[in-house]
Image (cartoon, rainbow, N blue to C red; front, side, top):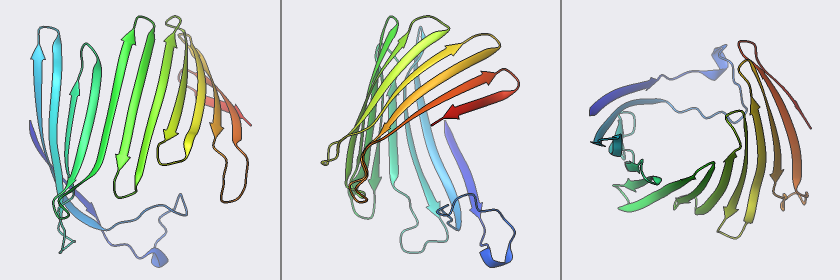
Length: 206
């Protein structure tokens, strides 16, 4: 399944425009890019079993290195869900990033393992999660993020969801790692969100 797309971000004079800036660090990059991708699917008697894709883009506004890293992604749907992607830089002849994720379904329990490696940013992170579906209405999930470059256990979260036909409630407990630069301890927060079908959601947190 080949596909081609085009993205245009024109030049904008920020001092003479009324366009809103939603974040002080909001990225802005002028570009005129053509995106190419090729997707292949393999089916068996139960449906889609395996997919593999190849994608790259060409930015006409960059003269020296217009090609983006070449990305190859693949996924397997059964019996264990596995997904991975590799990004390769044609100019440096090096792999820039490798990401993978494995999900194992065991009756009411789903175990997930993930890995994120980036050579440019010099990062290597792992994440681990367990989801327990007690019923179609009640479920709970715990997740941990681990920095293999020396940071150790970073973020951690515990989430409980209760959903009915017309309403639902989600409670999330988060732990952020200590800020060693500013010498701040670990940060803990609790967020409770109520969802009403057709009316959106309202959250309470501290």
